[in-house]
Image 1 (cartoon, rainbow, N blue to C red):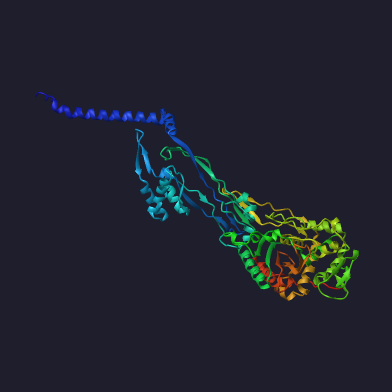
Image 2 (spheres, rainbow, N blue to C red):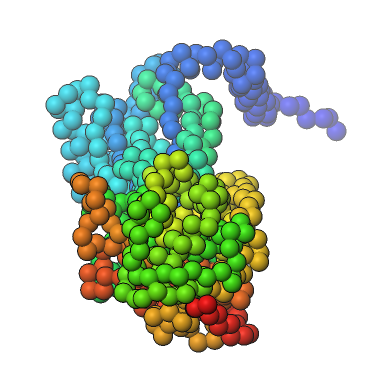
Length: 602
């Protein structure tokens, strides 16, 4: 049988298939060659060509200011991110465009469409958003700046940023929130509208809290679009650290309520309650009234926006008698068995005139009796036994005349005149807290020394700073300095216990189950205009610690010019409540013994 021949008709489909496949293959090969040329061989040339058609630009990446927390990690201050929405009207009016191969552009989305998207995110009328740009361009075709919205939330900002619109920018607004309002406001301080720290711990520890902004550099085409692949983060944003305080938020709140009540009840100008841990010097609360709400500092007078406890020294009055007693005992100038005879008013060496606050005949006082009755004449006679330079040197060791280690903004070092400037009257007056001035933290620090067995631990308000990367920097614990011996501190503590048990305020300050030590002080106020003492104006103090047999906490209550009761008796109710709350708050074990009774008279 003859083999059939292939006809032209049967060969034609096969030939066409081969031709078609060949053409496709040639196109694919050409495409691959071109792709390799673009991405590998001539990549730099093409990038340079694209970059030459655009402009280098940059945007800021914003860091967040760090938080402030209490000793338990409770937030006292934090940053809230709010943003403005700014638009470049000239670019926005063009809408979104694509560049064609021939160099022309095609609009892919009009400004009207974009405005509707933005309005949907912001909850605004699309027409109003559109008008921001159209009105700006109508007024100035070259307009490059307009505001679409202010103070938008982080969620809205993110939604807008996700649109990738090259003509929108989102500068953040410095937002700081203090969730507890005025609680601790005198300590926390506040920041300005520009985010700059202005007062308090915000200012003192700004190095910990402040953030560092970052920067992203990119190439922008002539149409305003970011050229793909050109974004480079040249500087990363770094958030601020978390500042951990020694303060207990709940205790601070309680003391704030308590001192506000006591100021109002006594008609005082202002008041403060301070709580310090005896063995560490850590400030657990320092509440003032009136105080400032850092959320709205301008609502308070300028004089109330800081911490007057640190900035305004006052004469400590009779609270200083405990220091004179400690100095005399520790220096060997007298002993607990030494007695002096003192009347209610006497003229002493150099014609110095000293009087007690109550009338009495000659009393043969022990040192304990002088503290119980708070006799100015009695402590003056004990002070005569101490060389002036010795007393001055000890006072400096107690921290008198120098700012505390807290270094609070605006903190005063108080007033302690050089010993060579002491006249006879000043010599005696300084023994009972006149002729010098201390801040509240200075006085509390001196009593911390007695409560801590004679070792002074500098006060502290800050526990640590935790950087954004988790690195924790603890505030170094200050080395304690021995000021008086443990024996001296114990003897003075027992005398102050007897002030609590035998003094006129014994029933008002007693706390069942606890041995407590106290001293009161009624300092005279100086008229800043005349330099003389103001009549009938006093700065009153009650300070003490508990348990006296193993001191854990020092509490001080201060009132500035109380009117209903013009003595330290005005402080007693708040002191008893404050110390009771502290012992309860920290679950301090009650005393296992009763206070030893010491004799008032020889």
